[in-house]
Length: 627
Image 1 (cartoon, one colour):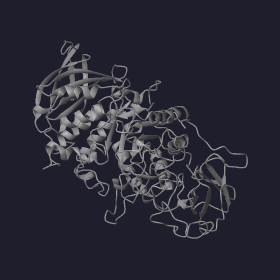
Image 2 (cartoon, one colour):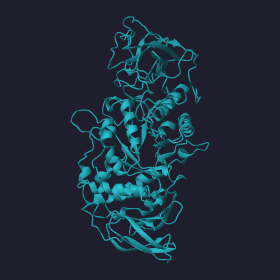
Image 3 (tube, rainbow, N blue to C red):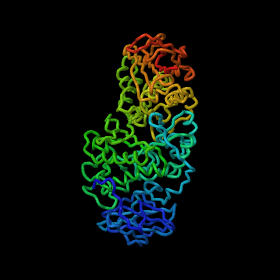
Image 4 (cartoon, rainbow, N blue to C red):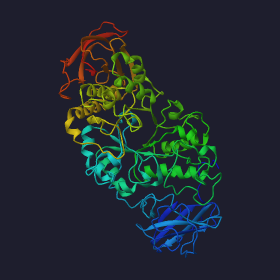
């Protein structure tokens, strides 16, 4: 099937919805198992009466359980004659555990966790009945900032802040709340949480989802996520959630051969059962062409936005939804699924965003045209790779200023349909380290690491695009990202000047003082670019004019230029809003005397109508705005 909307047909006596559905006086259950001959639901409400004797209530391996003796089924579901099964259990209440027992065509009894379970005891445990509508949001009606005024902070809940890193447990959603003051001080207005769906074990990046509707139990479960979102919103911070639809699992995966059926010994009803099943992470690509699976994924996307008040989603590695090997589009159903989800979000949840980790520079990803996937933005490979290469290179001669210009000025048509960064969870692992470590592995806290990593950050906050930083980047975290190593928060004080530099850059990026509106604008133009001196200057503007026009001058050399002339877009007085070499940011910086004001003369230069002479310290950025 390829229909976008596949729902079970219900009569007036059946509640709508999937999984555990709260009723007055009990709970209804619905599950999709088209090859089952019968389905039971069992749990703590009936003392697990229907559970196969060989399958304990908290099993360690319960993909298939052979029937050893006939169980007593107190709650057998009724076929709805379309692959769905439904039943109601009076007295089943919130907090009780449950499972489905599938009667397979070959006679086996198979104990399964609910694919739609909102809460689980663990990835190898049981579903828990919850009421998604019971949470008191206390009037939360937050609206995320527009894309041109968004600054994203990517974080991994398990390592962001861990008060007791030796207790053999990851940090939790509560721990993120404990550091909300830091995020407010830093000035970001969105946090992007690496995947929260229940995964195998307690420590993970999260890109191995076992139960995509359940919030990771080791992080605190669904109520703790709602708490975090509500509290973040009260501080003016949006929450974007990372989701994984290019594969499931591959371990602790009850969806695998869910109702006993499969073809070619592959995954069964939720998965492709041919060559399309193969992914770099396992043989577990969902069947995007099957209506019930499309609905399952669509429901999941909408759940995060509606039940958790999330402000956006970031879809992991979208090329592997449209392609087996991320090259030619040979899975068009994956592309159309993305478009369906994104189009519905645009229409039904118009204040929410969907971001693709695509990294192929493919313009249709962010197009709403007939050939587009309709994402609001995509992570941009045109920026991260050349900028990282430039700041990491040991020899100034290796820095390609043309590549830097192209990275800054690239556009998919809308300047804010790309997310730009120098560090993300992918860029600082898998063989690569944090930028300070890549710059100077022998001294990642030293002068060059400080100077060039913050220069890269300054480009992130001044180039057109949605800026993003990765947790700890603001206090010069080194090494590489691991899901078992939490951030060292002592560095927050050790490098409090660097934190201030990030905060100042964010303030300018968001025009909080009213002088730099241009950094929120669509427009960018080169003023000066010299590959010999390694100086690049560009103009940003929204509408143009005083308080709007911004000039950014970047010195990517170890030379201090005391009198450096560049073209300017307008004559008149310009004020230095930030000098990244200032000693307030680090005692290691030179602290060249940079003029607070610069007079641009009405003399043409670099093809511009005016010229100005600047002081450009080594490896630094000067940001000026027009008075």
